Length: 107
Image (cartoon, rainbow, N blue to C red; front, top):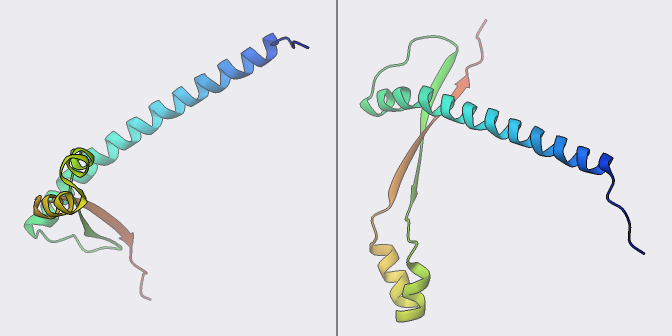
């Protein structure tokens, strides 16, 4: 037996899609604001600039990643061992992120 898709169902779906789109837009704007605020602090920390005294502190988090989009093709053509060798010879990309924390106030 066929059921009917109701107008209420369609309205609920449309409302959910619009809410998701709005939330995604807000999230993208917040991400851009974080990146804009983080960049000069990250550069200053990399230079060794001091942090103003106060309850807030910041440190750099460092991570590395080898971007090897071609790895699957190399595995298929040359084998896994060769793909591992080439991957290990690939210079990793270094990422820095600022981690901000609040120090406990001493009394």
